[in-house]
Amino acid sequence: MRIRLYQVDAFASRVFEGNPAAVCPLNDWPDVGTLQSIAAENNLSETAFFVPSGDGFELRWFTPVTEADLCGHATLATAHVIFNILDYARPAILFETRSGKLNVAKTDGNLLQMDFPALPPRPCDCPEILAAGLGHPPVEVLAADDYVAVFENEETVRNISPDQSLLLRLDLRGVIVTAPGRDVDFVSRFFAPKYGIAEDPVTGSAHCELAPYWAKQLGKQRLEAQQVSQRGGRIVCEVQADRVLLSGKAVTFMEGEITV
Image (cartoon, rainbow, N blue to C red; front, side, top):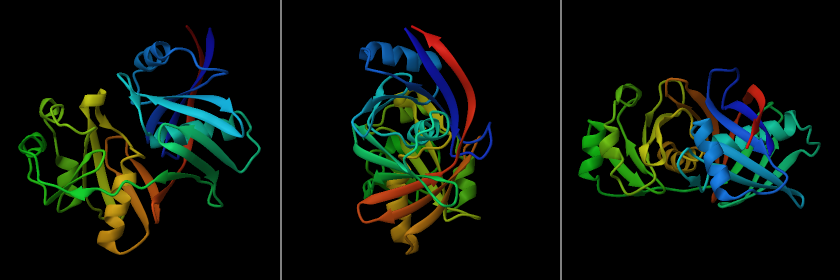
């Protein structure tokens, strides 16, 4: 079986920025073991697979070790491939996923805008392992799909060097660290060793948690965000009731074919 593969830098305006994702178009679904093996071989934080279905596409995401319920940057990368390489003519793409229906549309500002479910985090006690793993006590801790550790400033977030072996022991998916930004509304980083991801360069799904929190803190619905990983990337967030619109750019790094 031969499968086309595209590697795309998502939330980036040029290659070598943002978060790289692999995207594989399929005619139908192979077994889960094959999908997981391809994702492990790619060894990127996410590999996206999609199959035509009705008026849209079925979309699934895999980390090197497991299937994910939601992934922003790989969704953006997939939409980039469908719009710009496969010449999809409609103005918006409908995806059927494990997290429900997701829409990605082109905007007037030459961005791709994803319509995702909001995941507002709730305040919680700070687990001892979390504080020890981050090496710095957060100002506030919340939880949704991930722990959200809030710090006083951007410099603290940039300087955190986590103990991955401790974060691996936490019960949730991963850990988001965040703070007010100097040049943007807020900054963040994301660690998910349980999913085989020491640090994710730019995490769309994390902003489904971050955007509702910072919208409430800052009293504004539209926010400029930056994930301050080594590669870095910017995301425009807009909170609309129980949805979060995440906008960004993507660029193609590589095209190829794999044989399974």
